[in-house]
Length: 190
Image (cartoon, rainbow, N blue to C red; front, top):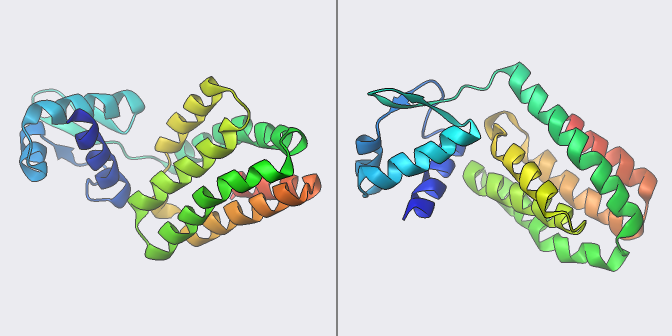
């Protein structure tokens, strides 16, 4: 139950149904989700550990507001981790293996087309997990996944982001490392 509640709350955060700066009580959210307050509290504690919400004693949980600086810092950290890994993978992973990641890239395109922020956020995380997983470093995948949970999607051009996934895969399959370098830096720099 806690996992389902956590997924529902993450989707509500990404879609904006839970607004930044607002305080929400576990009982009210539980009623909204049709569950007791206990799994909501547990899920909100997990979200607090991730930095998505903060505990407000005797009131509930406040949705964290990400400043432009925090968003830029997260993008920089993600780039420091993912860009060199993808560049290394471009040199070491066989071209045919990149086709395994294509369904995840196409799901980001479909999610962007629908305009569903929660679906897009999950599809994007799945795409990046699939790419990074080809390196075989589970710790890196976990760290990168945690950072991606902190992205604020409302400010992003989803169609552009999704198109970059497909273009990156095309370059990886062609073994065009120069294009991969340009695309991966653009993806994280944009």
